[in-house]
Image (cartoon, rainbow, N blue to C red; front, side, top):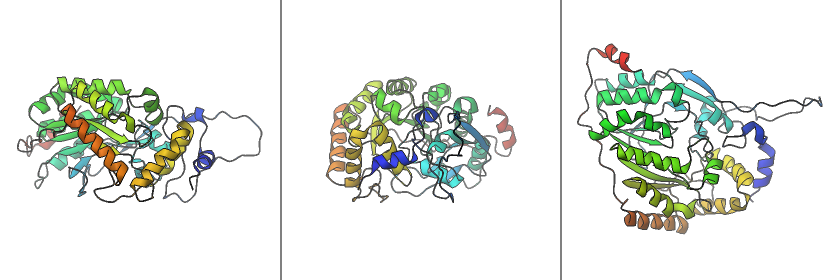
Length: 369
């Protein structure tokens, strides 16, 4: 049975302490030996509890390019500069990765962040390896490279400079407006066929967006990002992702139309996914913010995954199966044809790749700031 109310009451943290955050709880990750819970110390003394502040720790990574062989994604390598994401999207499928750090996929994921501070240098070193063969590098597939902490850290911009200097193809996914800062790099790269960008627009309703992705720019502002990237010559795909069945699915056509009007050339969609701890986090959030939709959302998801909250089967995990999944796919196909979004973005070029100053790699790092 679906005891969402009891679940939320048992683990939730008071609203004032998590204001501006997406997760309702901070329950222990699956590798922690003991569960986390507030306890009474026996003293009836009022005690102020601080809000969850953002903490950014530094990490020096040996390698930063991650390889994959998944048949569900159109790339074989990716780069993630940050662990955790301050955007706080409650539905983020990357939340379970925080458990590997001994942290909670809940509030820890959006408040206790890690920056790979040597990412630009490590990236340049890996691209310079004798056996390296170029192919599009995906950035933003796990955590957003343009989340708020990037404004001060500047690691994404430094990595873009490396990719520009190597003339290496890159595909970026983001919800962040900070990408506009880097138009001076992205525009010239786009002119050479080296970059494309996907902008995620989950809803056009400010109230829904503020609730489920509290530190992401407003939907209208994300559409403006599409417009500005397009004006700079950067190919953009509008991403209706994720679709929350029973909550945001009625907006599918409107999201696509708004993206097309802003200048997007292509479109894609992904159904809400609830791997591991994400399921409990989303159910807690629904119980608190959208209790009337909670049962409907979970019923649809279970219908698409054989009665389970989520099934990670190849070729189905991104969209599910069954009548409802088929209906969303059909609506998407009809809409993109009508709007002229039913085409792929241009292939990125790998033939321009060149290692600058081979044999003098140390000189290159002086220009990363």
